[in-house]
Image (cartoon, rainbow, N blue to C red; front, top):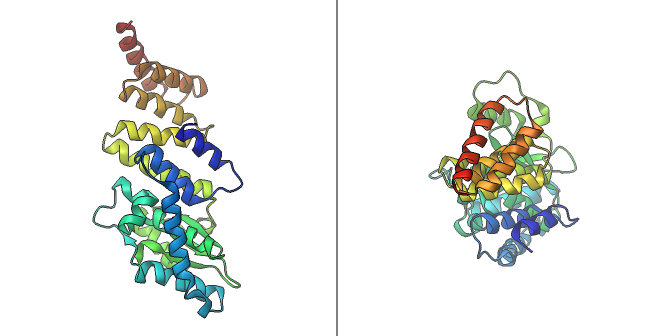
Length: 274
């Protein structure tokens, strides 16, 4: 069984969790020798250590705050401001080893430790900045794992979005709703796609898009991206297949003419090899 099949099985299983999905991507895209089990055990060990102090707190809110303090002040997981756009910041194995990451990976860390401690944590996909929430007996509590687990108000969330997106016409309360776990994986994959393409790491970018197709088979632009990335990887037969498939699915797309030109280049190059 290949790595992509393992990912597909996990995504569709009842035991789906963010940590294993993230580690499967890391193994398939960048770290083929990665031991997924070893890094899941690191998460278990962190949860066990955190649990030693959680019993001293009686409310869910206190337990959630205690966990944030443990991860981001005692163990000192932190945001990697010096090298924010490095691909490794997205991979949980690298975050566990370096203790640095970006908002979505540090939020994933919190969510996975919280799950082991029976706290109902969830991701919040604010535009431009990912944070984490915890259901309590009253109002949910929101943390910013990238900034030392700072507790956020709704106004703080508005300011975070404004800081990354510019002046806002308005703030949508739907932005504070829980992100579905698979949507978190999709957002992480999209981050990686942009990073690898910007660095012209075509092999890694191709693998990332192949994982996106597993999660979003109905998104036609993924077929286009697969075609273009197969071309960059000099796999002309696959490039022609996916570019043609995109044009069949989206014949009136704004970029249809450009894609037709790319397909012609692929076919011309392929014909010269035969």
